[in-house]
Image 1: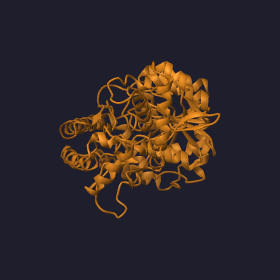
Image 2: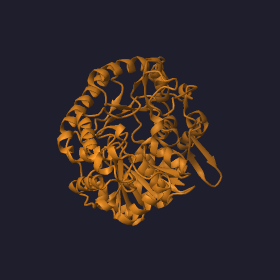
Image 3: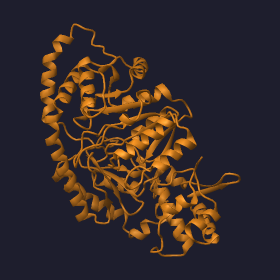
Image 4: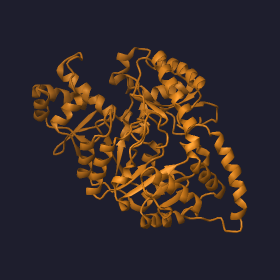
Length: 484
């Protein structure tokens, strides 16, 4: 069971002197917000009343009343012998808000209607993709006499990926690369290889929702470690590893999805040290690493981990085009062979033409990326400006790269906003989709992958939808009853 000490919780709560109401209500509201924002994971054991009172500088009676209020609202439960633990009310845990359940995680409506897709972060293909396919078709005849099966991937693509990783500071041989049908496929192979029912997988909180789904499908349990506002909480990672002994870790240090955070070199060194000491196999998701918009990227996290404890996964989907459906895993050669053996039970390889095209594209990335990044930078800045004008109550940290903004709505209405926006013709991904156990109702991920004019029109529509779910005012929207 995860635990939080009195001083740790007091630091998370911060100064509540400017909030209204009795002291116990301010403490309860602060803890409730920490749960909703995912900074205090569910099933975390709260400190004893006396310990928290001392850390906050309040009376024990104040903390007792705060815990009573949390239990009454469903945000805490107490059991004899296990103390008080964080929880969510049934409606929150089931993913509903205000009696309405948000849409499922698909880019289109269930009835096939045409909606503007802001649920997925995937840009259109650059012109280079067409040229790469032309080049691939020219190369195809020399592959036709063979079987077409390449379990490990085409040699030219494995070489292109290895050369790119080496150039970025991670020395890699082609034999250390396994071509897959996307980064998610690579992660699934790792899960199938090393996890079983009940095994724990350490993840950031929030994280990529499809990764959470894959963990659940394999019967494993996600162990969330909340991200700080400005990066990775290294002490929390060390504590989670020590307390839960995870079988696997899944991390996104490069323009993290959905927060956009970029781990500093010092953070990478410490993460590597913690995971190496514990001998925790780590999947490093580098899907967005090539989309740096403001400044360089530190050396790969895998440089601070041994090859037998690291699987670095990447993909052409975000950098180039999702329709390519080509990704890869990079690890030690022995581990790559084991992953290939798992793959053989499912499929015998990826399409040859697509692999040829991606190899061509990777070799030409240095020419493709500058205009790609420039366009994404323009779109990002346009979305930030439009939100500031039309939805000034929203807050979003401007990421240095990647494809998304992680917006704080100022009220726990994300799931209801998704429902309202769909009625206005926009498909969104609610904040709870990115967290474990229904956290992040105050958050919404917005991609800046559409043209500037489309983003501007979308923000106008979002402003209308947001007005409908906060019609009673932000104060009312922020109460427990308004969203239960």
